[in-house]
Length: 242
Image 1 (cartoon, rainbow, N blue to C red):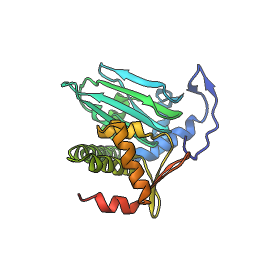
Image 2 (image 1 turned 90 degrees about the horizontal axis):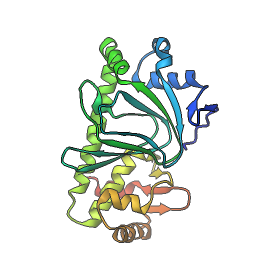
Image 3 (image 1 turned 135 degrees about the vertical axis):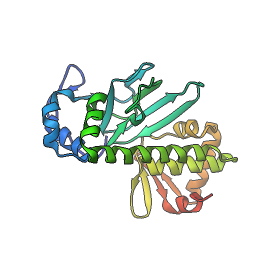
Image 4 (image 1 turned 180 degrees about the vertical axis):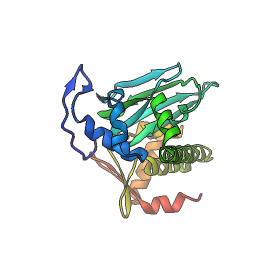
């Protein structure tokens, strides 16, 4: 999990009993609303811990809830009506799936924990009510939705690269932007990321992906150790406008 430390009591295997007030304050800040506004609805919010590899939800039906990732990393495999797979990785302080708001839509999506996670579950009806009655919430969520669409566009553009090396590098840059921690001269990604995961995201064989990553290491554009991946911003600057 991240650098934050949470003190919570778990019941019923994964249900977090305390620290609810702290989590509500985090969510209130995320959607740009005073936390006191959420207090009358606090029983509607359910917070659970999920272990690495555990399925958070699997839905081929209309979702009734939306999820706020408090801590950790998750992967969402979304299938469209044509059977195409879209894979999205989210880090903490993310609300998903945003595209389910304000419409009756069937979601074919599997969401799993890449690391140990803390996740808050919120009824979609409540989020929509808050949007309709608090314009700042609507504006904030619209901004998040636009950011999500921009990230998806960046990923799709990466997949259109003709050469495997360019595709892998662009996917790595996409990951830096979406799940990386931004430092002055480099991006840092936690150790859950694997060569196989990059290979799957880039639709490039694992062997080729490994060779490309080793070449980036040789150029001192990437450092990968047992702890984290470190990506030089020189790599991003060189390929961002390709």
